Every structure is written in C-alpha cells, then in structure tokens.
Length: 221
Image 1 (cartoon, rainbow, N blue to C red):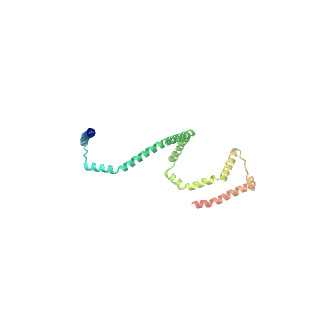
Image 2 (image 1 turned 180 degrees about the horizontal axis):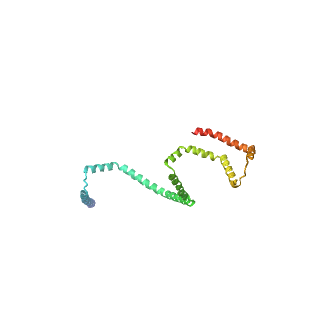
Image 3 (image 1 turned 120 degrees about the vertical axis):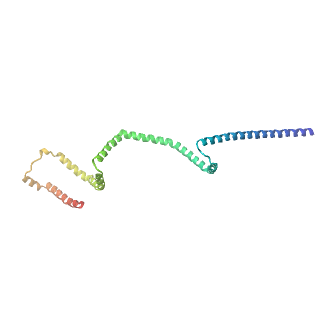
C-alpha cells in the first residue's frame, strides 16, 4: 500500500516538474522574443533617428508623446471616419451602375440631338449673335433693354389672330395686284368712286386710325 502511494506521489512530482520545465521554456522563449524585438526596435529607432538627422528633422519627445496620447484619445473619431469612408465606398459601388447607365442615356440623347441637327443649328445661331455684336454697339443693346417691354407689347399685338388675318389679307391683295396693269382713274372717276360704300368705309378707317394715332404720338413724346 505504501509503495502504491509513493509511486503516485512520484508521478505527481514528475508532472509538476514537467510543468515547471515547460513554464521555464516558455519564459525563456518570451524573454528571447522580447530581447530580439527590443534589438530590432532599437535598431529601427536608431536608423530612423539617423535618417531624420540627415534630413535635418529634430524629434521632440514630448511632442511625440502628446501626439500619441491624442491619437489614443481620438481613436473613436478615427474609427468613425473609417466607417464613413467605408460607407462612401459602398455607396460609390452601388451608384456605379446607375451613373454608368445615366452616362449611356446622356450619350444617346446627345447622339439623337446631333442626328436631328441641333448642334449644327446652334452653330449657325452663334453667327447671328456674332453679327449682332459686330453691327450694334453697347449703347444700342442698352436702348433695346430699356425698350424691350414696348417691343414685346408690339409683337404681342401684332401676333393677335385678327391682326395677323388683316396683315395676311393685305399681303394677299398686294400679291394679286399687277403693277404693270393698273387701271387709270380720271378725276371724275375718282369722285364717283369716293361715293361708293367701300371707299367711304376705307376713308373712314384711315381717318379714324390717324385721329387715334395722334394722341399716342403726343403721349410718347
């Protein structure tokens, strides 16, 4: 019985010694690693110092320490910025196909406009602007700006249906007249024509027009 107990105790001691040995090996490995890292870090630090010294850069230990603490203090802010950057990258990936499709649509629209001759039209329209700039002074343009309302009102009145119809009738009558085959009127014939209803209405229109035009001219002066 005692032999069994002694054997068990020896086994436990062996396990304990084995654990102690393993712990010692791990400690030695860690110490060696720390030593190697320290040597590497020291060499890297010395190399960096030499490079910075050659470049004329002086290191301020307190400033570096303060910067390090600021970096640690703003770690959350840097993380937020990185998250925002990742979100922007994801957004650009999502918008990429849409932007590509939109670009294709714009190109097709421009192609359609080119086929219809819009670009050639605008190219020739630029010549109109160039002629205006060449033949008119800045003062002319200023006067045009000052009177643009009156001009637009005149154009508006000229484009009324009844006014257009009257002008069209006048143009058609003039077109149908033959200047080389106009009948001759004597004084007596003119006097007889003046008594016709058509001529009387025409004279009444002209006289009424002139009478109503005179006050307008006075007001504009």
